[in-house]
Length: 299
Image 1 (tube, rainbow, N blue to C red):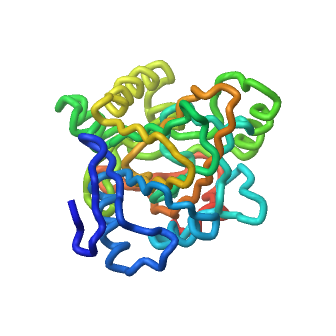
Image 2: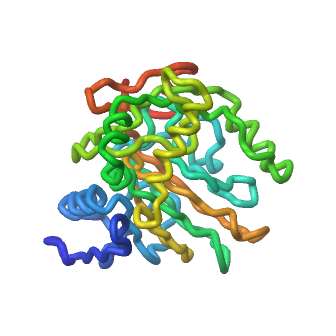
């Protein structure tokens, strides 16, 4: 498909994902091009821009076209001298090999995330991205009606797998150096499209009003719809690629399948709003602060 401003959109998954062809992200993009990229993002949820060869400044400039930027992370250190860039470094123990949506343990998770590949292994190290709106639509009616009423508490402080080395252990200590617990609707209404999506993932640990055992069982069932193969696109990285995904209605997973090989991505996130459920109720803090030092968006 060719857009009105002349770039091409090529679908790479049946339900999620498209490659954008004919756009140089290092150039000054016309506002009409940015509008069409945003429309493609809303439709396809995840966009891949191949062989862009951006530097840090270029990634920051591109991400800022979609809104105000967050700090790199509420608890983890940024790239030195770049407070808005998070290094995703496999050698530092940052291996997000669980399904999650970025930073849902705070009240205002990011609107969108950009990932830029710098060093990629010769095999493995892909990123999987799932469409949580398609997952919601797949639910049987009784389960969908139940999900519409549920709320989940998301936290950065829960039982992880044992760190593999001291670098991973130190990263874990930094990650949980400040505890956040936030209640979000299990079904989030997208603020731009009105779509409903399952807003859960790895940080969602318990359901409001239910015990831990029932919470685990129900979250497992709901999560199984998100991770159906038909709802997933696999991004195979080459150096210089950039991926933009809608953090409000996707989850992602980076399989830890590249051994001791180096893998380095840089992440920049766009500030989001407070999620709203089906009845319009908005997320609320259970423990911790409003992460105002992380996101510039007012509650």
